Length: 269
Image (tube, rainbow, N blue to C red; front, side, top):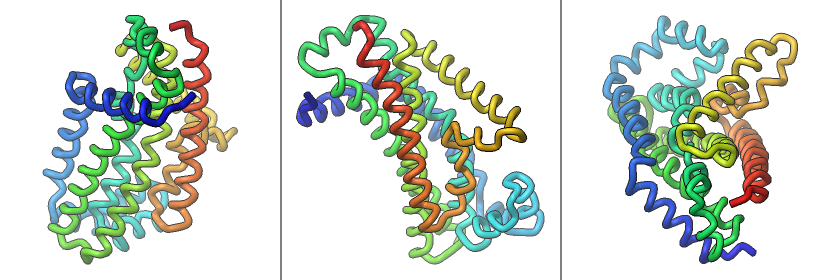
């Protein structure tokens, strides 16, 4: 039976423990270094270039939607729009690093058999998921504020507009992270080492992307096998698309999380 006080204690322990060892640093250091390189080179001149004819043409070629490009880089903050676009693209890679060892190593060492004398499998599985989610959300909030400050320094819009768009961006990215964390939770239940989990997660994701790319002309709906399939909805920010995105990403999360939980509760610890 799920006890909230045990879930809270387990979550806090897992979160603090992950910050105290190299497991979280393998995600935090590359994540912030990557965004430092992006923001350090995205000055006001770069923001003005991406709003120019050449910049809009290049973005249109990449997104294959000229109307969406105008909405993102002309009607809204260029810096925050670029941050949203890059985040949606690279999220799978960083979540692989952040969530690759939720259960693998402890299952291999047999540590769960001692924890399960004082907690249930539901509490254990859910606490690891929440702890990783907290870590990712904190990092996402920092980079979103960072992007918003850059937009203000570049004088791209009024303070209220940037704050609103920054908040919308944070909400979308927060929900977009969840399915990939749940996906790695499932992968972690199938492997016995951190490296094996990382490798297997990358392999499965690359295989899915390749499979979708090869069959996209005949079976266009296959793109929705992974959360990246709704990228066009995520980047076209409005109230209706935000609600659609949150609903769809919640469904992805529940499916991936349910698959992992189904495997975890039947494992021999």
